[in-house]
Every structure is written in C-alpha cells, then in structure tokens.
Image 1 (spheres, helix red, strand yellow):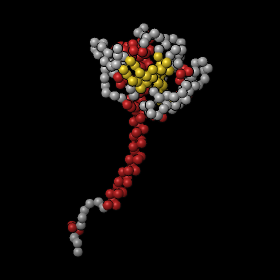
Image 2 (cartoon, one colour):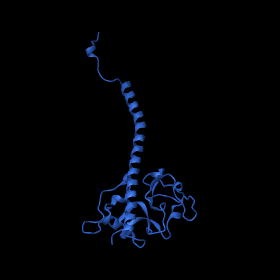
Image 3 (cartoon, helix red, strand yellow):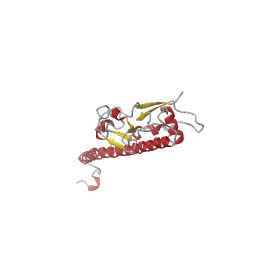
Image 4 (cartoon, helix red, strand yellow):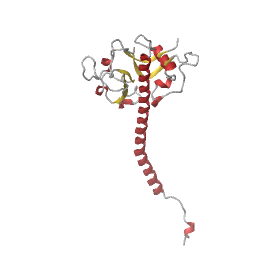
Length: 209
C-alpha cells in the first residue's frame, strides 16, 4: 500500500492546461480594453496640445507678434521662444513622440533644421476674415473624402483631430461631420474648401539655414 506521504504533489497536466486557457481568454478580453483606454489617453493629450497651440497662435496675433505675412519658420520660432513650445514633441502626437529636443537654445540659436509635424498647420494664419469654425491645425493623413489614411494618421483609420480657430478641438472619424464650407454654408468633407484664401496645409517646417 502506498502511503499518502509518498504521493507526488503538484498540478496535474489538465489543471495547467485549464489555467493557461483561462489566462488566454482573460488576455483576449483585457488587452483590447487596455489598448482602447490607452488610445483615448493619447487622443486627450493630443487635444490638449492642439488647444494650447491654437490659444498661443491667437495670442501671438493679438499681441502683434505675427500676422498673415509671417513666414512659417518665424511662426514656429515665435511659438518656441515666446509661448514655450520649444520641444519637437510639441509637434508630435503623444502616440508616437520622439526623443525630447529643444528647438531653440537659451541664446536664440536654432537647434533643429527641420520638424516633421503630426499636425498640418494652415498657413499663413489669417489676421481677419475667419470664423470660429476655421481649421488651424489637423492630424496628418486626412483625405479629400473626409477620412483618415491608416498608414499616415497617428490613430490609423479610426479618425483624427481638427483644431478650430475658436479653440474647439474635436476627434472625428469623418471630417464632414464638423467642416462647413464658408462659401456655401454647407457641410463638406474636403477640408481645403474651408481654408482662408491663399492658405495651404504644411507639415514640414524648415527651420535651419
């Protein structure tokens, strides 16, 4: 007769398999939820960045630092030196930021030759003749049909951010839900139809000489 003390202790193979199955099921449930929460955090951080950029641009215009003749280079450097947007990550999505790097040093020397922004800026920024629904910034990857191109957009095909002159920043799947053509007063999916005359979207900021 075998004593109970001599029996092998530990988990049976079937118990291990059951445990692994439970872990796999829970992972399949929890991981997508966690990813969705993280995506929302990235979007909220990016919305805050764009809101602050819009406020800063409006203040610079009101304070006389910039007008419709200000070059894009001077605008970016003015934002860096006057309003504190002095890091390349200020122009990058929180979802795919890069190593922190100052744009201008304490002596005013430009440290970055070029910035590839995750936000397209509508330039030149008009001094007048715009409404609160005029876009100033929006996420890269926006197509003419109002949807975002998955490979280019920070958020894939899920949508993108649009920041308006009035300070509103919205995340939408299709831009047509928030864009209004100033000429027709009707919704439009083509953001170019909402730009002030002569303005174009710019992503690459050449700062070095």
